[in-house]
Length: 328
Ligand code: CP
Image 1 (cartoon, protein in one colour):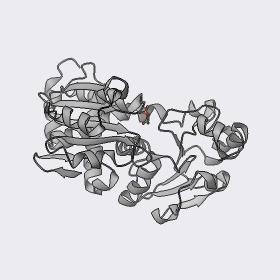
Image 2 (cartoon, rainbow, N blue to C red):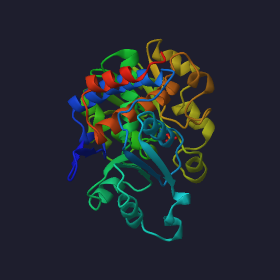
Image 3 (cartoon, rainbow, N blue to C red):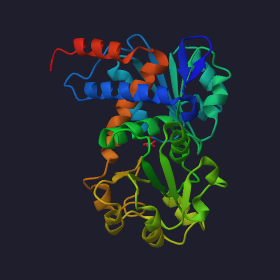
Image 4 (cartoon, protein in one colour):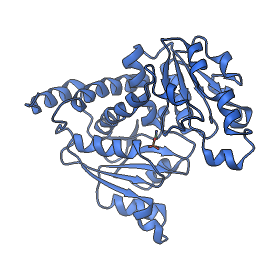
């Protein structure tokens, strides 16, 4: 993570801010946090006295809620602000809003915004607050990828050497971009499957394989990672002809899942468009890890908040947490 100049805290803008050692450390912390989330009393004192502001300028169910739960389970004070309730509605600039909130001395701002690079931009002006990227335009979504890595590790062990086949609207996906960066750091292979209209220019520079035939990409995949297709894009663009044809060529349905074999995990960051990029019976199948990804989102965001705000060795965190729970 990037050092925050005036405190011993670290920003998280994208996956390149992390080394492989950082990621393994966060995954270890995430496993430790997962045990808190499975207890009856889901509370640890790790971030007691810390203040976290979730500042979301785009819709979110999973990321916003899991950051809120993560902060609260670690005893932080958590405040949620959305675009619809912020003074940006009255014409205040994003920078004025962020500086106003930073003047209230929070320890962290968790930010989602539709513009790529928002977090880095704000960090230039906010000396005293750690910034965590909760998704910036089509740029990056690092905490989603950390969540995915924990989910994969729990089912398949070490991610190094595994093959992820990622399918759908790659061009507009911040999750895809973060995985492409993470794959280089952690040593996993990414195959991208999409129509040419939904691939970014020069995507091969990430060292991934590119396919336009989904069936050809499936053999040897350890996980198939489906990406959301925006229905509004289907209606208004010529990226592909129709929902039915998209589902046939690039959707994951039962016949295609059978090609992948029993070992292959099915993943999706959500929200899913059932019947478009993924069939309902596949989304709900035994190999689907969609809800595990959601559950791990809380654990990994607990790990990221702890690491960013209040770095502590994993063993120390676990010891405090075990001592704190006298119910189980
Ligand atoms: N995966 C993800 O970012 O979902 P939300 O938009 O619901 O936060």
